[in-house]
Length: 222
Image (cartoon, rainbow, N blue to C red; front, top):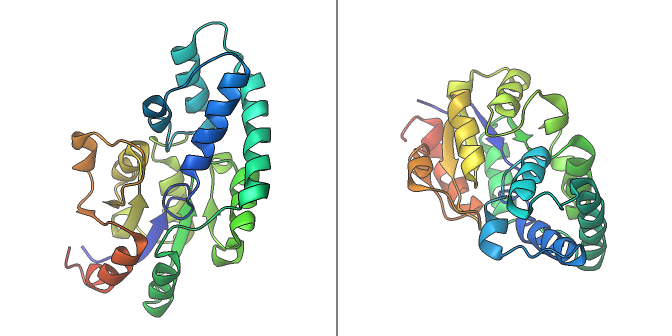
C-alpha cells in the first residue's frame, strides 16, 4: 500500500538519547543503593515513564522509591546533557530532506511527556523541524497502546493504514501495529524479540537508508 504520511518516534529514532537515559538511571540507582545492569536497562527503551517506574518497582522491590528516583535521574540527565549536548541520529538530515522533496506530511509520536519532548528537541536544535508533535501528555495510554499513533494519524488527516511508522523499540512496533500503520524498524540498543521484529514489514540500518527507500515506499513497492 502506498505511503501518504510518516510518523516518527523520538528517542532512539530521531534523537541519540537512549544511552543518556540509561546512564542517568544507572547513576541514580547507585546513589539510592541499587544496582541496575545494562541488559535490564535496555529493556526500558521505548516505554512510557509510568511503565519504566513499574518495571523498576518490580526489579528493585519494595524499598525502591520511584518518585525520589525520578527526581534524581532527571537532575542527573539534565546535568549531563548540559555538558555533552543531545545529538540527532545519523541520517536525520537526509530523511528530513527526503520528506520535504516528496512533500510527505510527517509527525512525531512519542512516549515522552510534552515538556520533556519539547526540551529534548530544543536541546538538539531541531524543534523547528516538527510543527506536529504528539506526546504521552495528549493521549490516554502510552506505547505499546496505539493511542499516540492514532492521534498522529488524526492530526495528519491520513488513514493509519497509509502511514509509515518508524520505530526502534518493541513497544513502539507493537503500538504501530495495533494502530494499523505500516511499521518499519531501525534497530537501536533496545532488544526486540523476533516475534515483534516480524511486525515490521521492513528493517533499515539508519535514517539515511530509510530516506533512500522512501520514493519506492510512496509508490507502494514495499
